Amino acid sequence: MLESYLTGEPYDRYYGTFGIPDPITDLTSMIRIRLVEQKIADLKKNGFIVGPVHLGAGQEAIAVALSRSLIEGDKLFGGHRCHTHYLALTGDVEGLFSEFLNKSTGCSGGLGGSMHLCGKPMSSRFAYSNPIVSHTIPNALGYAFANRSSRALPTSIGCSVIGDGAVEEGVFYEVVNIAEIKRCPLLIVCENNLMASHLHISHRQKRGSIAHTLKARGIKTAVMNGNDVAMCAFVFKKLVEEVRSGQPCFVECFTYRHFGHVDYNNDIGVGEQRSNVDYKKWLAKDPITLFSAACIRESFLSAEQVSQIWADETQRVNAISNRVLANA
Image: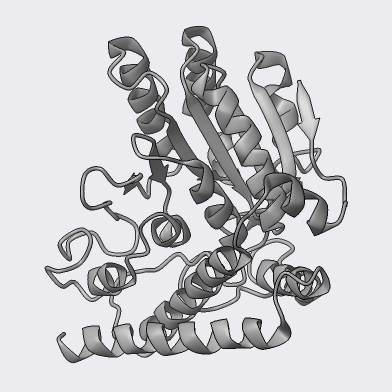
């Protein structure tokens, strides 16, 4: 059954229902991720990073909200645009910067770069990332199936994070079918940023959405605004409880990446329908801007507190970056 949470209702409804105890935590995490992604873009532009980087600026709300519902024993398997999830789950800014600069102190020992990240220690909720499109889906299924079969961690979730292009691979439907038949605790989170590399979704999916393709397969689905961190947290909390009971779920989160497919350019005019008009429209829906405004409006935070978080995190990220660069 298709369940849509794209209601357009105000932040405070979801914020209050979910009962977030401290909005500072979520806003700080989102801002930290944004600053790290911008710093990575700068390092790449200035030649400090050699390999490609796939940035997730603009998609922070999904990662931060999802991290709230995953507990020890759960494993997230990320795709090539996975920095946001690594940071949301581990907070390891230094390990990430070190990895990009090929240092042995990097989270993957300096051998993985941007797209091959590993969670440390092994108890980390972030398992690893795989840059091959759609391959995180069978990885997560394998983890979920093994736990359910061995009964070692029968309620531990295997979570696959994918982009909208991954659903056009055959393995996606094979995994969904197995997960439903075997009742595996599998959660598939699709960050639908409307672009598969440089091709707009309107040229690939007639309806512009993916969830409808799963309606006949019996898997539980939800569609939501991926730029609303409070809504995302509310939906993930509800669905994760069902996943733990053996109900595999697919969540489609509509969002938009600020950078282009790869590296620091914004890809305006590149490929199909990534226009300056769309770019500016989505920038106005920036998840950090929206959440900050909502927190101020609902008196969760003051404007001064929001500014202070930006200042503190800017200082922190710059200090870590400078330290890593100094030891490069």
